[in-house]
Structures are given as structure tokens and as C-alpha cells.
Image (cartoon, rainbow, N blue to C red):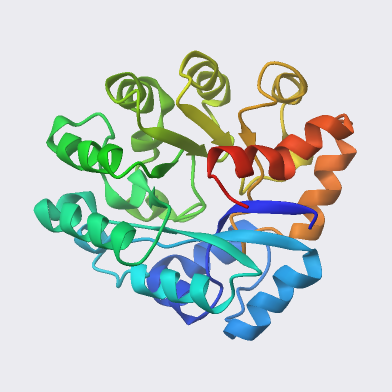
Length: 282
């Protein structure tokens, strides 16, 4: 195993369904066409890259009207391919209120999912909005990990008006910082380098012991020098390897991570040791 990828979307039919109106923009953003894989093709890609993945779902039905990638589907994939899929992050739509709390408990206690992914831009909410604090209380009680999209997004990128999406929801300060301060027992992972707020995100990760950082969805050769320096020093125990698959190939990510000149001991932490510790993965 070269790495544990803590942020991979299914590249099967459910990806196309969940993100259907955004696929054209994503293809322009990725500079390649999206191809729907069978389950077996997707698993073989992971095996060929010699990575284990944490598969993530998404529920943004309220604001987009799009069908969700169900928690049952993510759990089924974990069960079917345990040697390749290390765990599953489900998703609940925070606007569903009590239904979101009930579904979160079911996803953990009955389906065995280890956390939840949120995309504030598509779900159109601020993490520090107190209307959603009952959900964070429930997830803290369940002792799961939560992932939040940070910074700009490929959803609507380059399209007129960004297809109406607002990146303001994904700023680290004050939104994620407030959440981490108000829920110190909730383990939080910020997703992506958080451009244009990379330095803000670094500050939150350094200040809040319960916040970690997955640098997925971004080619490592474009990491700013300040971030590369922090990875080698004060952030080395808080950085996680993620791909945002199928957006960037594992081969490219691993190659560019290594080309950034990190010490082997640092890469071991980033590639898998931090994930094993933070997500309690074998």
C-alpha cells in the first residue's frame, strides 16, 4: 500500500447522477472527460495505484434537487470491497433537521460509517450557523469524524455566474474556526488547500487541536511554498493524503507529492500514518 486516500468519490453511475448538472463544468475544470466506471473498474484503478480509499457520499437534495449518493450505497461498497475500501464517509443534508440527526445515527450504528462529508457551497450553509448545532452535537455524541469542503470548487467553475454557487460558504475563518472552537470534541477535517484562504486554513489547523487538513483535489506541484514548508515542519502530524477521485489520478498525485522534496518520514505520515491514527484505520 502506497497510501490511504481519505477522500474518494465513487466514479460509478452515482457520481454522474449526484453531480449531473455540474459535469460539463467539471470536465472543463479537470481538462478531461468524465467516464462512468463499473464498480469493478473503479476498484481495479485503486488496486493498480496501490492505494486504499475512504469512499465519500453527498446529500445536497434540499438546495440542488439532485439525488444523493446514499449512505447505504457507501456502506455496501465498504462491505463488498474491504481490502480496497478502508471505510466510508456518509453524508446528511443539514437542512433536513431532525431527519438528518436520525439518518446520521442510523448510518453510524447500523451501517458502520466512520464519518460524514459536507459541501457547504452545494448545501448552502455556514458551519457556525446555530440552527445546525443540534447536528454537530449529535455527531460529537456519535464520535465520528466530519469533513468540510474548504475554498473554491470545481462545481460551476468557469461557467457564467459559477452556476449560481457561492464560495463564501467555504471560508475557514470565521465559519470552520467557530465550529472547532464550539465543539472541541468533534474531529474535523478541512478538505482541499482552501484557496484563496490557504494561510487562513493553516492558521485554523495550527490553532485547533481537533482540526486536520486533507489536501485533496489539487495538484501538489501548485502547493504554495509556505504550505510545503509547513507540511515538513509544524503541520506534518495534521496533514492527510486525499485525491478527490476521480478528479486527479493517484499516479499523478503520488508523483508530485514526492517531487515536492518532503522527507520520507513526513511522506509516511501524510500518506498513511496520520490517517491510521486520526480515522482509527487498520
